Image (cartoon, rainbow, N blue to C red):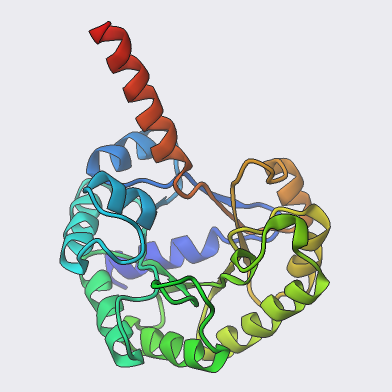
Length: 252
């Protein structure tokens, strides 16, 4: 077993329902070292943060070459498993997504996020189309790589309008994505406790929740059976606020 495969297996084993893996998302080698030194079990990039740190907007505006180079620099400074946010896979067609994922694995990634929305407007792809993209990613990445299938169902409406019908839509997609080879289900935007519980209970895949202002606390997410908790862009936003406040104090 290669070192990278061993890391991938370790990463997979950390996804335990009721004992969430906490990912405090990083955006470069420096933040990766800081988070690793704090006791992290694994590292994850966040596309919004990586793009912003390099002067780009989110939505695959960051060139893929730069995203892969950034990943490689992170992987070189840590022995922890590293997973990359590849947004929609940087590809119009499924084979293009496969090539993007293969590049990430070659650069040191043991996992990736792949979202099922169009980067242009955030609308959802057809579930069968996204399943084809996940199948291509799985074929390119090999069996060990952890493919976290992100569904943007809960970004289609504001949180107060989320309901059981949306949970069912997410579950239908989860089943399709699991059949295609996905290992996890990422549902950013979902914050209502009862709906999280229903989704987790019925999901064929371990569920990943993203921390937002109204997200239940980690202890409650654990009680609901969540297996992974991501912090998304929040660490970057907090760090930029700290930097701005410190600069204003120093310059005043």
